[in-house]
Length: 111
Image (cartoon, rainbow, N blue to C red; front, side):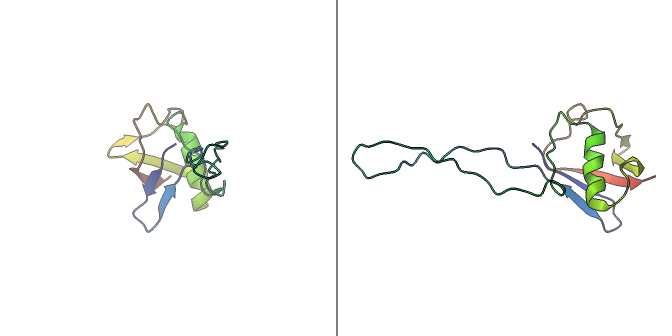
């Protein structure tokens, strides 16, 4: 899961966050210092609103990222153009193919 920041340089900066990965317990058991049964308790992170912070991974396409950005900005996803320098990202290509990683900044334009 990754987090991508999109800026349109007109005052709108969108941060598409990912959900927390599942974690296991801390390894601390119940009971005193002597023997006993060791029970691992699961540590569950707080849930994130799915409409604001959808999961994004490198296997997702640019179209999926545009739909998450459109949900936050209130614009239609097909009117959004994502760029990095002079490279315009196509909808059917995955984030991994464009080597978009965690914490990357993209330029947000409108058609």
